[in-house]
Image 1 (cartoon, rainbow, N blue to C red):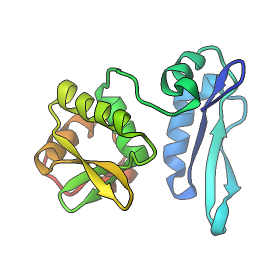
Image 2 (image 1 turned 180 degrees about the vertical axis):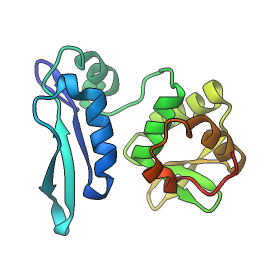
Image 3 (image 1 turned 60 degrees about the horizontal axis):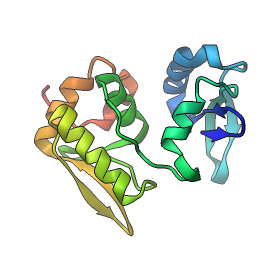
Length: 167
C-alpha cells in the first residue's frame, strides 16, 4: 500500500499466479481502472499486477497497517477467507507443516499474528528462524485444522502450498 491523500493498493505476483491476481482483481474491480497486466521484473522474472485507484475507502486500512510509515499488524479479526488469502499470499509448505513468510514484520507484529492464530482459531504456531529473520511456523496438528478451515476458499492452483493432509 501507498498513501498520499488517500491510499492505493498494488497487487503484484508472479505470472505463474495469474489466476490468483485475476481472482483478487474480481474482488477489487470497483476500485480499479486498469485490469491486470504482465510486467517485466528483475532477473528475467515476469510479474502480473494491477493497482487500485487512490481511494478514501482504503485509507483507514493504510493507517492501521502502516502507522508512522512502518508496516505493522494491528489487532484485527481473521475470518477463514482472510486465512486463505494469507496462505495464498505468504504461505509455503514444509513436509507436514506450513510457514507464513512474515520476515518483513517486526517481532511485536509477529507476536500479534501468533496470538491472532491461537486466540481466534486455536492454531498453534511459533516463530521459526529463517537466516537472520523470523517467520511463522504452524504446527503439524494446526496445519490440518488450517486446511479444513481454508479449503473452501483456496484456489485449486494454490493448494500446493499445503502439505498433503487429510482434512
